[in-house]
Amino acid sequence: MGPGPSDISPEVLSALSRPVIGHLDPLFVGMMDEVKALLQYAFQTKNEFTIALSAPGSAGMEACFVNLVEAGQKVIVCRNGVFGDRMIQNVTRIGAEAIVVDSPWGRAVEVDKVEQALIANPDAKFLAFVHAETSTGAVSDAKSLCALAQKHDCLSIVDAVTSLGGIELRVDDWGIDAIYSGSQKCLSCVPGLSPLSFSEKAVHVIKNRKSVVQSWFLDQSLVMSYWSGKGKRSYHHTAPVNSLYGLHESLIHLHNEGIENSWARHRKQHELLAKGLNKLGIEFIVPKEERLPQLNAIYIPEGADDAKVRDYLLNNYNLEIGAGLGDFAGKAWRIGVMGYGARSENVALCLTALEDALNQ
Ligand SMILES: *Cc1c(COP(=O)(O)O)cnc(C)c1O
Image (cartoon, rainbow, N blue to C red):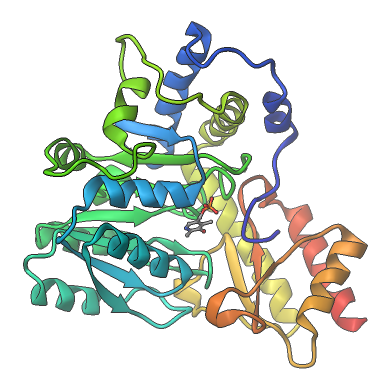
């Protein structure tokens, strides 16, 4: 119950152990088409360019920036935690300019401030933000932010690593242009894959770049032909065959449950956890209306030893919770209620274990 990787269901674990077949085998190619359709469902998009990148969420982030942004361009980047900060590093390494909009850690991105930055920088080409800040447990208003991007003629780049499958996310309805996620959070698969989706506008930008993408591996114009369509697939890299079996299985679970039901289940388990934490006198960092259900950031109670409590949970209950990250290191714990892990028995175990640990 940390910030990811989350618990994996027995069905996904067993899918991972199927025999390896060639990554250009017709059976495998058929399964990839299904993965694509299932990802389109998870993202709520019809985007033709919807794939699982063969690398973790951080590579999904990098893929969005290096494919879309060119040197000299301006990108408005929202920072309210660790992952927004990484976006800035991606932008500056490209030789582009990051216009940083800072919001307090533990709070949503401030939409008004973003609008001011868009007005002050009419030449900005992109707006980038993190939907679900895993470092702080805050959700930002992706719908409003993407509407602002459109109004000011910017493409939106959205980090949905922790949000996909856990909270409402509608790529097409909200007009998101580039979005990436991760396999190991609310999708409950093994780490190492990054679902990625680009709008037609984003694909157009990629196809009309002035410069070549500096990363050969992440250059999506090369990967497009491997993932796309009916035509002959050409070798780009060896796909992580078994990990994709796992993702396929976890996406089938999500589809069978229904995306809205999955969002509701995360909310319900969060509410159970919040009620129990409240009884233990533990306080949340994030105000109620900006809280992520799948990532509960709480203040370490007065007098409790951060590392000792987490060790106690691990050694006595086989239970992992997350430490604080960045500004919250040593001050907070992060309890994940993600994917297959978002179940009542987990929440009950966590509350019992935490109460015992604090008493000890
Ligand atoms: C976990 C996470 C990432 C990075 O994903 P990795 O799979 O660890 O590379 C990026 N952004 C957010 C918001 C995350 O929670």
